Amino acid sequence: MATARPPAPTLAELSPMLLEERRAVPPGDWHFEIKYDGYRLLAASKPARLKSRNGHDATAWYPEVAAAVGNLKAGCIFDGEVCVLDEHGRSDFELLHRRSARRGKPPGSHHVAYCVFDLLVNGGRDIRGQPIEKRKAALRKILDCCPDTLLFVDWVEDGDWLYQQALTLQLEGIVAKRAGSAYAAGRRSPDWVKVKRPGAIPAERFRR
Image (cartoon, rainbow, N blue to C red):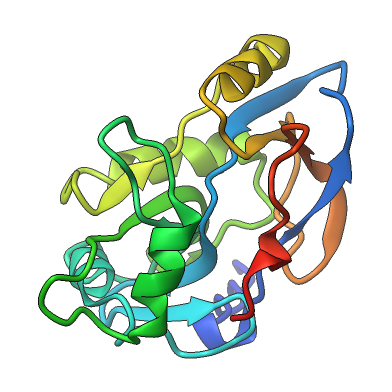
């Protein structure tokens, strides 16, 4: 007789996986992503709900994100950063901070994008224990709508090259994720590390 699968965690029960910080690109088997300069956000689909890193209900703060996530298949929980992007795709934290302080989207507000880099629950199934490569592949299949609001965050294998691009474009830095790693919700893990550009402004520069 097959063992019943335990229920997947709800959005309220989940907290984001946190990163360690290093000064250099780690050697070995890693996947590398651009580090977006935004606010961390967990999102659930159907009904769409958004949750900030500190546990606040952010659904009404970013209605365009909630609407886009609501168009995705039911029973999914995503992890990513909400950002204001310029014409070159670079995130602008100051513009995001101004927009977020308005707790909604009044006329004239900057549009935000949800830069999604992980999938925690897929169609009601908890996949946090799966290797990051499988979670990323499943995420790519889901994000097939709303390209101006939902951005799939891809990776590259050459961390040194990506870091040099971050320096050239004056980005905040890069993120390295260990190949084969699981998602460690609610704790800081050596499997995810950030390497910031020298001189990049720390995230605490604004009181939230």
